[in-house]
Image (cartoon, rainbow, N blue to C red):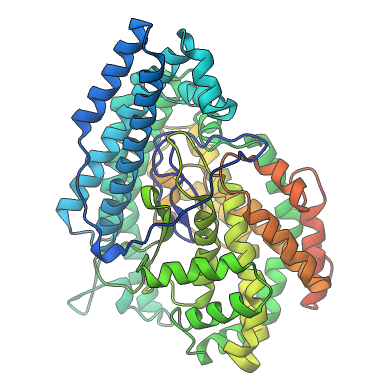
Length: 578
């Protein structure tokens, strides 16, 4: 998941399982990548960076002055120069917000950084509307021609979209929304318990090979679901109200627009039907044929997340990857632009964000939850793309659907390193990763279908939501998932993000299939893809780099056939006997 944490910011990218995302505005794209100045990465060390809350009063005063100068009508150059100054201040705000967010995520009991993150979120919600007001006033004034020439058509187009997706009318609702998201994030880190032999036990204390502990597992999750699910119900109703105030009949349509998608909810639904037909049987076949071997291989391995770092270093230097990828990893490690490890108070998530003013990406992974090198490879795909991106402007946007191909694509290209890491178990660990990618497709579609149904009935009681989720999950995965969906941060933080894992995983699997036949071709495709960073469209980019449109092509069928052939599965894709 890649996304911007606030309107106009290219920010958090994420793991296939867990994402930190709190959007207050749209992702905005155009067909051609804009020309940008060369990226200069600051020589900063995150451990020594100071956090200072930006002077929000001074920033708002500058906007007031700019509006006055627009009204005066004789201060064109002064106004446009002041506008540039305001953009620089917003970049600083963005940077400080990222620092506060990272430090809060490292320790969710840190009340100072929790309050700072919330304060800057609220400020940005209001600021986004003020920037829309100022930008529109300049464009409609006598300064408009000079402004267009200075800013470029892409900037103006993104403003025009942004102004329709945000409004002062929804400011208070957006602030309430972010407060609920923050409440969810804090509560989701809570250890829920059940009683066993008179003692309180957590999920980590359970042995799920024991039937009695399985009952305790569901007792704990029922409690967790009851509390987190109530927050979700409040968010659903609040978001439906936001969409209505902006003139949308459907929150789903608003969310798809907010994410800057060039496909519709109907496209996603049709794609999901193909996935159920062709990839659900493949998932069953992989599980039935290889589950025991995969489980045994995973039990034998002692390879950890940290072990993946030298492997990645060597692969980037000697594996035919662009030199800039090795530079990006060196930059990250030498400048402490990462947080690995775990701890009771650390957010159970992985993401990459951008310290905007420094053009410095930052990787966050809780390795108590994400223990294998595949997570590192996934996140570094995001990190490299952000490294190429550089500093962003107020209304720049990255593309979630492309971003997840950056990450999942690198995962499959790194299969070449598995033999060195895993020895004789390499094939089974690779099969496990392929099964995970297939399941990402299925889960992405399932969660999108679930959200669409919930937002069509925003008053749905929680017990009905749980039953609905169980039924949909059964259709895709072959088993029900009743309570655990509340652990999917995306539902709370970034509605309708999850289907991006499905579309991107299909493309990553297509890249894997290409690499089987011609690795050089696959590497060229990946290199081209990563050059598309911000303000680009998803489907047009796929076409340009040589990947298939997952909606209009037979890509899903071809990927299923490649998996069937390579893994020597019985039956054929689309056959329930597979």
